[in-house]
Length: 394
Image (tube, rainbow, N blue to C red; front, top):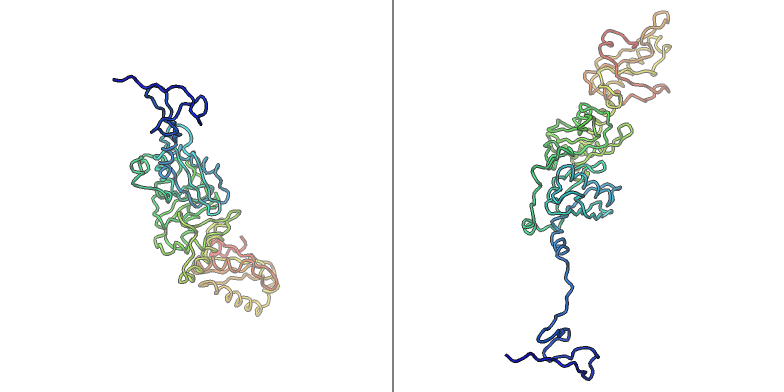
């Protein structure tokens, strides 16, 4: 074997002193290290970890839609990290599951990036979870590549997630179906299940209902979910109930995983009737008790007006005419002063007895605040047993 060729360290015209002369057939960026040795230049490479993160990002991100106007990157990241920890959804060890959040404030959605593919899949179980008072959608992003994701990790939520820790069941609340599940938010905390059901049942029978409560105290958390037996009333109920004020709160009512839907033109008449029913139920809830079949009016007549027989009969006919506008009127009672003008129980009051509660509730709503001869009427529900006994002064 011939000895290696040693390149003399001599200057070549045009060569920078101290450098090795170029050798025919070698690339300019190759360097001679010694006998027969050539070093290729170092090409900067992307770290393996960075390459992996980029390749898996589509499977590690989730789309979160329906955010509130006050949501920001920090609040979203903190919320989802806490929830993931609470349900046992963290698969990459201790620490926050969320590594990055991007929010589109105009369209109110976010991309939430998790540490691992499995954690993103577990986050899919949070669809419909309540964030800042309203349910949010949790979906795969548009760039999600299912075939590639399947090779990276599990694409389904872990079936052993403790969703009860955040009072949310997989894909629904208390087994209520999508997409006709309705979210009812902004409920006063003192409303009972019976009161909320009564309000919702103004539109029809419920197939499912869940008033969400605190696991430790048992108190209402101010929101509920429901599904109607007749799914055609879903949008009507949402349109009629949304925005109604209940005490110091305003109801937010919409399909749990959609925006507020508008009723179709053919539903307008039904909607008007439903809104009337809502007004009745709202009145019932505000007074804090269920209505009776008897409505008592005060500040509509005076004792002097009732002394004269003709004037009394005229007032009686007028009240019958007014009362019949709201339902089937069974009887009208207007107590009068004694023969000599002496006071008797109930003088100054008018009692309207209806065949059903629907009529009395409409009358209570329609007559309260009405003016009669310049006087503003006060209408209240009256106990039926006292009315039946002729006790008109209670």
